[in-house]
Structure formats: structure tokens, C-alpha cells
Amino acid sequence: MKKLMIGFCLIVLLIVAGCSTTPSEKTQDDYKIGILLSDAGLGDESFNDSAFKGLEKARDELGILFDYKEAPDGNYEQKLEELVAEKYNVIIGLGFSVQEALEKTAKKYPDQQFILIDGQSDVANITSITFKEQEGSFLLGMVAAMTSKTGKIGFIGGVDIPVIHHFENGFIEGAHYFNPKIEIVSEYSGNFDDAEAGAAIAERYIKNGVDFIYHAAGFTGFGSIKKAEEMGIYAAGVDTDQFYIAEKTVVTSMLKNVDQAVFKMAKTLVEDGKISEKSFSFGLADNGVGLADIRVIKLTPEQQTAIEKAKEDIVSGKIKVTAEKGNSQ
Image 1 (cartoon, rainbow, N blue to C red):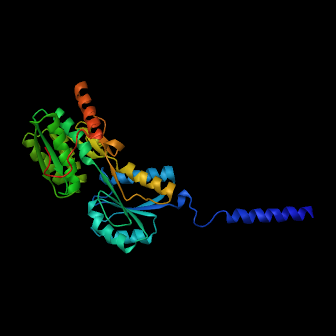
Image 2: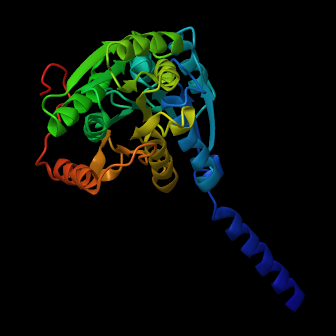
Image 3: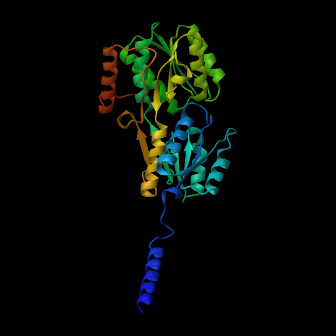
């Protein structure tokens, strides 16, 4: 009788244990994120690589699964449809060029959660992530003005769109903040994936006295940095620390911490099961943007103090950096 009672209790315990885990409960390994990269794709040493780095960190530290798509032919909708069919918890569209297709796909699949990076959307199931690139670029403009010997510096943009204006305006305002008389030239290549175009613009700049170049042009900017190295002037990287592209030339880089933003979204997904916020904007105050280590040159203590003071004033709101083109100082 005693053995029968023990056996009965074991059966009851097994049944209770089996009922305690429902199909809706998720483990970390259940969460999957898909991403459609922007035009230049992996290997751009910039925007795409940074986002991919964030997903790798989320895989290693949070246990999420992820995969990516590229659309070099511009067929974004097809790639987004593929991601939807593969049933990811969240699908990320990277870059302004993806926005139209992402919004169209999001409206078609209202129960699917999407994230748009580098754009602002009103579609209900899209969370928008933007950055205050102008704030980090302001500090970089100060460094360029401090570094220049000719008094002439240059900016190279990719496609002439609002998000790239943030980089340009911040750079201009920061340079003028330190040296109101400095001359700044700007040109847009019209693309993010043509290193030769970036090199050609840089060469023209240098022949006309520019001795510091800052780009916000993806792989096109890679070409401008290599040309700056070849012709013996200074340059700055963007999005990631691009010092290793040209170690005698890259003074610093304006870090746009896409990797940290992507990781934060993945962490929220794992902890909360969804991403409830409609939008995020990352600036200096929350380490969304900033400067990489300053190398190659050595700033004076007074110059370093000036940069730190400007950073504090931007965070506090004492310095307001213009984002929209046409309003820079």
C-alpha cells in the first residue's frame, strides 16, 4: 500500500510539473531577430558592420538567434517578405533607403513587429530609432578646426538626405565654434558604396588646400580616407572607429553606436517579450554618439578641456546643435 501511495504521488508530481510550463513561455533561445541591411551591405567598415556587431553581441550575451538579408539590387520588399516568412520576433530595416518598403510590409503584416533605424515612421507596428549625429559631429568639427594648418577643412556626404545633414551641420557648427574664420567645403557623392567617388572628391579638396576631411558616406568615405592617407593629410572616420583604415591619417571617428542601440532592442525583447516604445533617439547624453580615441595628433590640455566643456554644454542644452540643413552657423 505504501509503495502504491509513493507511486501515485510521483505521478501527480510529474503531471503538475508538466503543466507548469505552457507553450507560450519562451526561453532566450526562442527569440529571433532578422535584419535587412542598407545598400552597402556587410564589409562597409561603418553602418552595417556596426549593426551586425550589435546582433553578434546579443547572440553571445543574450542567446538570441539572428540572420540578415542584403538587397544590392534594391529589391527591399522581396527581402522583407522573406524575413516575415521566416517568422522572426522582430525585423529590423537598416537605413533610410529601406523605409518605404518597410512601411509597406509593416502595413501588410500588422502583427509583426518591425524596427526602423535611421528614420521616423508613424506606422503602428514600427519602432523608430534615430541618432543625434549632429552632437557628435560638433565635437569632431572642433577637433578638425584645432588640427587644420591651412584653415580649410572639408566634409563629404553620401546621399543628400536629412540624416546626412545632421553630420554636416554638426561638423560645420563645431568647427565655427572653435574657429569662426575657418573655411569649410562640402560635397555629396550621391551614393554610399563608391570608394572611387570618395577618393576623387578628396583629391580635389586636397589640391585646393583642404587638410582635414570628415565623411558621412559609408564605403564611399572609405575611399576618401585612403586618398587622404595617400596625399598626406588628416581625416576622420564615421559610425565606427575607422583608425585602422589609415593609421597615419585618421585622427578620430564620430561614433554612431548603432551596435549599442541594436543590442538594447534585443535585450528589451528578451526581458519584456516585446518592444513597447514607439521611438528612441540616442545622443551624447546616453552614449548614442561620441568620439573615438584621438590619435595621430596630440591636443593641448586647453583643447581637450574645450572639447569636454562643449560636450557638457550640449548635454545640458546650453549649446544647441542644428540638425536641419540650411540653419548652420
